[in-house]
Length: 89
Image (cartoon, rainbow, N blue to C red; front, side, top):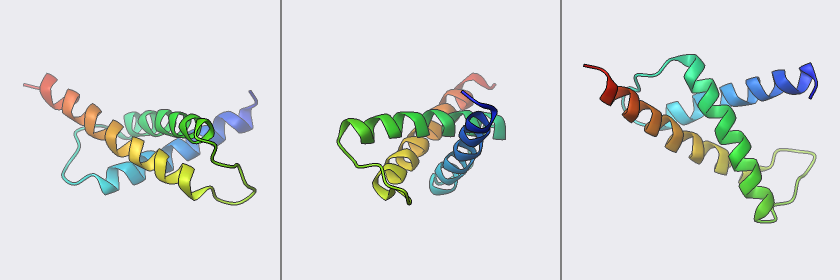
């Protein structure tokens, strides 16, 4: 892993996490760092699922993979927000 790939994962995770938060209705009581972490995890899992389903990797934007990543980010942000909401008193 190079510095460029790590920074790329952070940037992609931030974008995927932000899209997940924007799509999810309501207010989510999680910070931006946790949003980036959820986005990174969603991007990694979405890529793995897309590759296992045989979605071809192209030079351009892989729309099917991107949709999978954003859907997973919505689920992840919702789950983390629900868990964080329960722990607060």
